Amino acid sequence: MTAVSIASTGGGCSEKQFAAPASRSAPSTLTTPTLVQSKGVIYDTALRPVAGVQLMILDGPTAGGSAISDKRGTFSIAVPPGRPVMLETTKNGYIRAIQTLRGSQSLYVAIVASPVLIEPGAYGLTLTADDECRVIPDELRAQTFNATVIPTPGAPPGTMHDVVVPEAAFAFNSFRLGVDGQLVAVGEEARLSWQRPPFRYFEATVTPIPTLVGTPHLSTVSMPFSVDYCQLTSPSAASKGQKPCQLIAADRVIVQGRCDSPDNRLTLTRR
Image 1 (cartoon, rainbow, N blue to C red):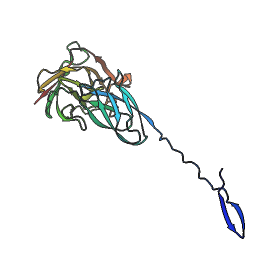
Image 2 (cartoon, rainbow, N blue to C red):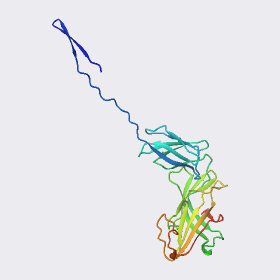
Image 3 (cartoon, helix red, strand yellow):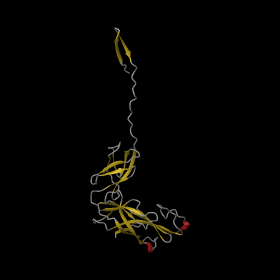
Image 4 (cartoon, helix red, strand yellow):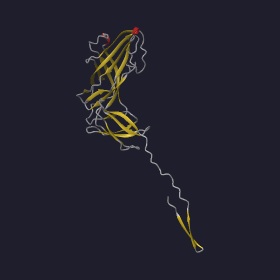
């Protein structure tokens, strides 16, 4: 601690007075913002995980923070809690994109190749079960629905579409269709479920295998699916998002089964 010396002259003598020590304010402390790890998955627009994508935060207190997606497409990056950040995604052969990251979520990157064109509008969707699927009655083995294809909000233009099937309205009535160059694929958990009188229920799960489309415009695409079927003595109590043939008391089941034949085909055709 340093004292301040004040010299005073007068009456032929000199006197030194010492002022009280100057008070010091406490040194300021720099606070480090609390961060949380935001985790997610990077997909291409054919809905396949993409490894080696560089992510960089562009704004906020963590600007410049970065991460790289692993072989499963997953990433983890430090962000401020409770606020979105602008994130740049880059990889050779893919289009540089700037996206908003809100918490933990999936992100999509678009391949450079021009995607096959899927026009929005009216389509016919036919599900045909293999003849070996004996659990399904012959008259219900092929069923056709009206479908509408609409661009997925927020996705890169022309790369992702939602297929909505209003008639399959029991629990699941839509699925996502992604395009990556000449490949077309459905998203994970792509399901449709519906009822036929009196109490016959179906749930089709579309297999997420990319399909190569050899033309610049998609008019027809076909992919495999599996199907669960049951016929009950009374209505299924399943609600939105539940499988209609699960958790059914045995005394209410007339017939129930599953068919996983690779020859089951879902066909989407432009009208």
